[in-house]
Length: 81
Image (cartoon, rainbow, N blue to C red; front, side, top):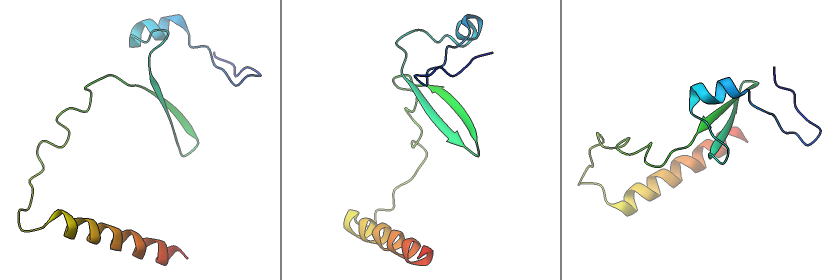
């Protein structure tokens, strides 16, 4: 079991690090969702190809897309107020 130190540090058990191939100096992201904390090991190139299947719509310009996106963001904020 890991305990949070006064410096808000946690020591990960060696057997867990060995299984997950986590080593000192690895880049970890910390994500909180619904009261749970998740550590994600960041590796170079891990997101390569994520957007590969998306098709562009040549009829929509970059400017039109930007303005549409900004308009939607404004509408969402207005709805929350």
